[in-house]
Length: 217
Image (cartoon, rainbow, N blue to C red; front, top):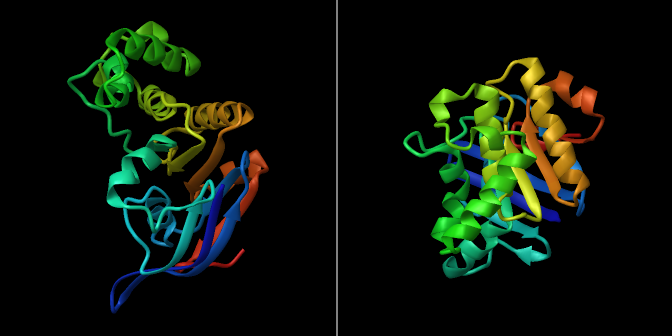
């Protein structure tokens, strides 16, 4: 699903975020990307999502070279990738149903279909009964579940999560990981960037370790 070949990312002469990264994540796999803060985990996810371009090297997602696609095709790529952030990035003045449906609204999906799919996505994360609530009325764990529902609304082939449990207590963090396992069981490839070694050990999934911009394990 993800193939990276000799990828470098350098912002200036003294700031090298990634150095000669070569790695593979298989289709349908659940994999962790770990390493200390500043190791390059977030940078790598941004390259996969085509938020940034590498300085050198190639990245393929689903067999497609994302480093070479035209700007006009980036939205199509991103529709096949769900992204979950540590800070949720929810719209505070919209209900959680509206937050989840927002992507479909941008894609001009009919309003009735937006509501149906958003409701089903919230149901999948156990929050359909709070669909008219606003983000600030929810706990941190509930807000993260809304963010996951939003990431899954398009049934993506790939789910990327950047420190998704960093702001949560251990119990909530485990709930989020259980949700990711359920998503993965339905066929979605999951790549989670985290420095939480205890959680990684509990999950028992394959781990890719990055240190100082290089894969070392």
